[in-house]
Image 1 (cartoon, protein in one colour):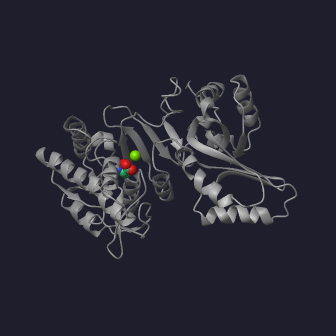
Image 2 (cartoon, rainbow, N blue to C red):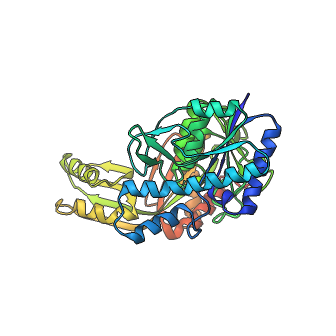
Image 3 (cartoon, protein in one colour):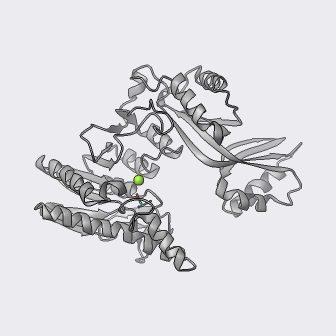
Length: 401
Ligand code: ASP
Ligand code: MG
């Protein structure tokens, strides 16, 4: 029988009323005679009693936190959610069982807080499905070979769903959330933003990496490897949502080469003047930052100047790592990285011209840029974020079908 993975995010499982909506999604799919694996996130958001952020604060209040303990603590949120969701389904007559990530066969490496899934041992899951059970799996977690409990990075329940979907060769992976799908821009910034019907894996991967909080990029990567459709939709409506596959360059077919605008805030630009550098300063800069564990992005290197961005949180470590370098280091906080994304822009003339025109009209200064086959990213002052995003959305006509 075909298998479908249904993943429900934190807001979908946060209250009894919401869990009833989840129950209805599971019942509707069961009526279609499909094997189902449910994956759940921890209940609610920061401030809710069992949300991941609440569990983290609880532990921090207690004393000095060790990252191994933190993973044990965080894993509890999804475990509770799985037990509660299984009880909800059972009440409606569904044969079900709650599973921790490791009981579901998720084997990871040992990187606490950001573990990678090495394999999914599916024997147990398959035996449950064969007897008509709907397993409810705690997302975001696994265990290493040595039995250490790990978590998969924030937002990692998506990764659990994708990994299980891939391992079971699922027909599709449904990611249920509180929005109707992936949108052309953040609707809190751009009111004209609309839900995209279909997208390419590579576009969604870029959107997730460039700050759209729709789905974890690792989940997209996994689904893409086996070409399993990912469907992002709302628990609270019957809207069709956004289908992600590798076969559609949907917007491009409609003559659009930009599909969406995404942004990342709280970044800082690092500018280092290095007149006549023979490569030795460049070597020092990037090795010192690497040793300090600072990740760099939007990297522009020339003999006379090095520019890149870091997260604002890393600014202190970066300035500490770069002191005594013998050159001027300027760190400009309060920046935003804004990206236009579209699989259709590859080789198209005029995309950058449009970006420049939109930002000029909105009187937004571009501090730096970078690009790939699918993206053009600009760095701006964070206070320009809203004006810039709206202007790009309008110039690329993303609000209209
Ligand atoms: N609960 C975890 C988090 O808040 C994982 C998830 O929701 O996907 O990051
Ligand atoms: Mg999420």
